[in-house]
Image (tube, rainbow, N blue to C red; front, side, top):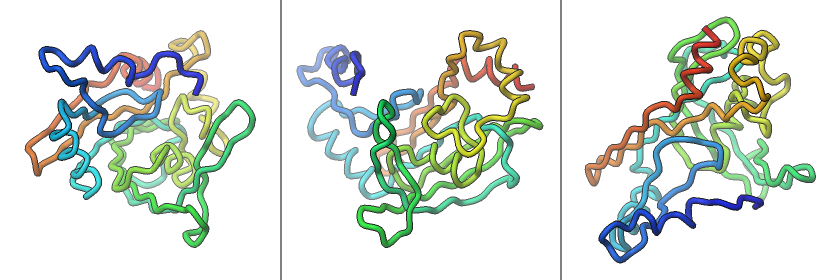
Length: 209
């Protein structure tokens, strides 16, 4: 990628008194904020990675979408396939039939926490860990793209009213991706972590009413 600063290059700063550099157990999209899980050593990294492989990790994300979805809650299930996007866009995930080579099942449950006429705050629980899964499910299945997501802005993008309300907050036109890894829980080894919503979430929520 064109990213000059990346997390892997900073992990040595988290070594503290241990000699080993912590290892990433999973990843977030570059623009997504919130919780990450690191292993302090090889043994803990292997234990954590096994929990992710076995689906023993419960993840909660918070997102602001526009427009507001019709349903209050539900389950999304679709098959996703990685494809090369337009020049300069990089890879993107597309929905395909399940029998297409390389397609992988992606499952997400969702619930509306609060809503206005033009936007909604969603709680998302991915049951699988596919690339860009939550972004595609919101944009393509719910028809409510996550705010700030230029790659998957869906058929119509955000409503004109929402865009007008947010203009005063993000006057430079660069809105952060409104997707936050809020909580990760691994009950089998007694780990639970929660990350507070960042400043731009609160600013957007206030602007949208």
